[in-house]
Length: 168
Figure 1 (cartoon, one colour):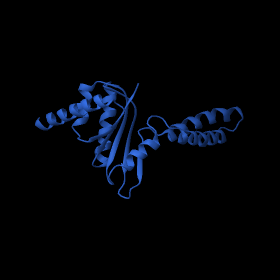
Figure 2 (cartoon, one colour):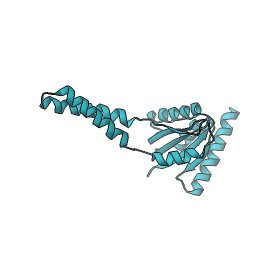
Figure 3 (tube, one colour):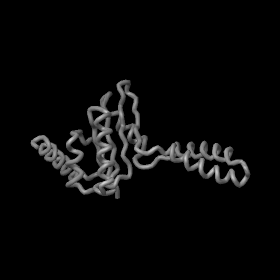
Figure 4 (cartoon, helix red, strand yellow):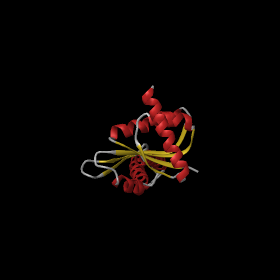
């Protein structure tokens, strides 16, 4: 079962840096992420989701490929690719993988204008490596799917890791 972590940061640049660090840790096999999204609350109060993976682009590419193949069967590969690409983009836009977009927008409404949060949907992680790597950027845990006891333990671990990174 996966666990959700939402961590608030004072600006979108820091939040994007943390997401990049989490993705780097995933390449090192220290964390297994299902989703990693930066939620920005702009100065005008609007919420912007910065998804790690564009389902629209992936859908369009896949649709164009299959549309082109089907178009070859009917001797109209360019029309097939165009129709397939448009259909794939539409399907990709309606696809929501990972953390629910509406939930992230609701939590984003609670952020101060000009700030951001990182939402990480974690399958599993090597906590003794991941927590210090992400704690160095500061942040405030605003939401998790952990039990109250586990969440409190995580907060204490993060504080200790932050204190250690400041001391070093």
